[in-house]
Amino acid sequence: MYKIKNRIFVEKKLNLNDRIELASDHVHYLKNVLRTKVGDSIIIFNDSSNCLALVENITKNSCNLNIVEYENIKKEAHSITLFFSPIKRSSLELMIQKCSEIGISAFQPVLMDRTNLKKINYERLKLIAIEACEQSNRNTIPEIFSPISFDEMINHNSQNNYLYCSLRDELKRIRDHKLVKTDKIGLIIGPEGDFTNDEINKFKLRENYYGVTLGLNVLKSETAAITASSLIMDQIYYAK
Image 1 (cartoon, rainbow, N blue to C red):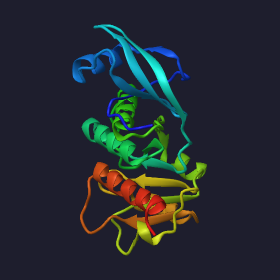
Image 2: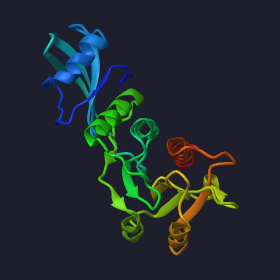
Image 3: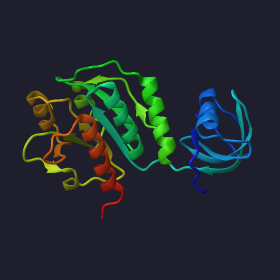
Image 4: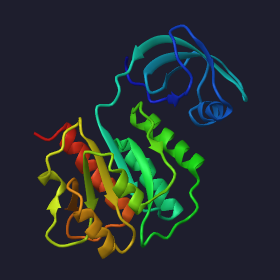
């Protein structure tokens, strides 16, 4: 199926020759932003299928589509959970957007010693993640979980490898660790001011927690998350 810029995520099951009525927010986007007209083609997708659909009717409040091509989508081979200390809204939204484009599988807020917790608008973050996947040609929408404590993260220990990005000296780089697509990878980004000594010591007591550096410069949390996500994806998919 050829690529079309206009992509819409739908949560319902899709089948060839189905006729789909889109939600009002999709209608506004197609009609007023993309200037979509009757007869135009768009892609509608969910986490298991990718479909080419023709616009049969579009008005101010409704849009009806006919699915004319259908293909199954394989589940993503990787699993990367981003554990992060909640940050201010604009920075958090940027992090969710860019890391969703890059390929993060799930976002897990963690309350750390230096967390300056702000109210999190989960519905808005979900919409940002969906729009990022629509734009980036990605079919899997990452999950966004409710906050957990630092100790809950440590004790749950559900990933094969955890990489915590720190400002401490003499840490290895991400590429120095052997990572593969089939691993469940946990990427941990700390709060402003880095992890506390107590948190670092808890990391060191775990066999599968590894401290990594992102370079000489001090990065903001969202920049660190975007950079580390990109480095991990590059290693597990493209590095020789």
